[in-house]
Length: 377
Ligand SMILES: Cc1cc2nc3c(=O)[nH]c(=O)nc-3n(C[C@H](O)[C@H](O)[C@H](O)COP(=O)(O)OP(=O)(O)OC[C@H]3O[C@@H](n4cnc5c(N)ncnc54)[C@H](O)[C@@H]3O)c2cc1C
Image 1 (cartoon, helix red, strand yellow):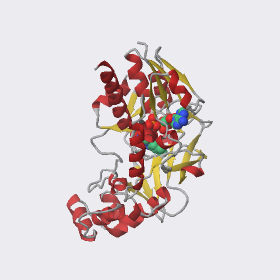
Image 2 (cartoon, rainbow, N blue to C red):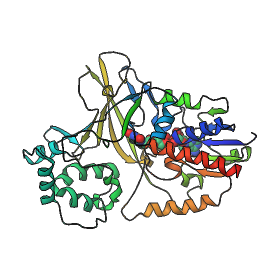
Image 3 (cartoon, protein in one colour):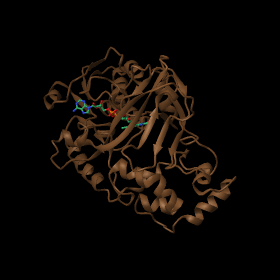
Image 4 (spheres, rainbow, N blue to C red):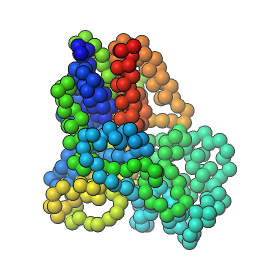
């Protein structure tokens, strides 16, 4: 097939498009401005023999069997049930999302059943029928004390905004449990991790004779004329030279620390409830096959949120405010993109959405298949 495809970004969006199109006979050239493949899922083994995810912990979970079947073609996956604990001001660790044990620890109660927890939360929740923002949603479901302990400082640190400024969707992602279940993701999600890490998985996705990859290569508009079509995962506002204004992102600075000894514990991520610099800490050795070499040490990483302009323009989380002002700005960029021939914006920064990996894979499988159908039709 003579059609030459340019793909900007070697993260999940770009790599899935590349593989599907190459398998169908297209010639695909993938570029990434970073020195590595795998986008934000990139991982590597550090001097402590520990596999570290360079852009924060990436836990693979999905309800979508098609996505699971697709990724499993490129590597072995092992089961991993993710657990998070919140560190209370006194230093105790309690399950997060809030469950029966969290409620007992915070209120000093001795509830044994979900019905008791539901009744307690119903009694302390504030009467808010139609929440207009994240604060109202939480106050209407779990009341002020839990909201102010687990969500208010975290949100302020994470987003630089008050809960009142944030969209309901930002906190609705986090479930509320009435039993002792202490897993982070929904119980019906399939939770797995690539046995040899994400970078090895991406190397196999991109290993196809129809795919070439150029790293340390930033997109330039002059590249378009050498290709028939471009799937582009770069920030959509940057592509249009910020003509309509900037789409903001939150970013994270990662603080890695070497710790002597390898303690046994069953949760990998600790959320901090205080107003310090950090939101959470990851102990990588708890993740399966992440203690790759025994050095008698382990690595933990704290995350310090900041504006992306204060972190080398590293864009991690699109900002979703209650008034949807950035969604509206993105809509105007999307209209510009619709009029641009032979280019489609993909992935997290191309579509200005927070997407989990399985969602990006699902969207990318569909996008590549639709592209081929449109070409044939
Ligand atoms: C801190 C953090 C934790 C996360 N944890 C999870 C999790 O636990 N589970 C989960 O499912 N998802 C998680 N995610 C989401 C996950 O990272 C995304 O779903 C996924 O990375 C999106 O893939 P992408 O290809 O759209 O973007 P990316 O992975 O960001 O890839 C885009 C690539 O495009 C490149 N690029 C950008 N601009 C240019 C340019 N001008 N020229 C050339 N290349 C360019 C970038 O360098 C990048 O490599 C997390 C995200 C973050 C930020």
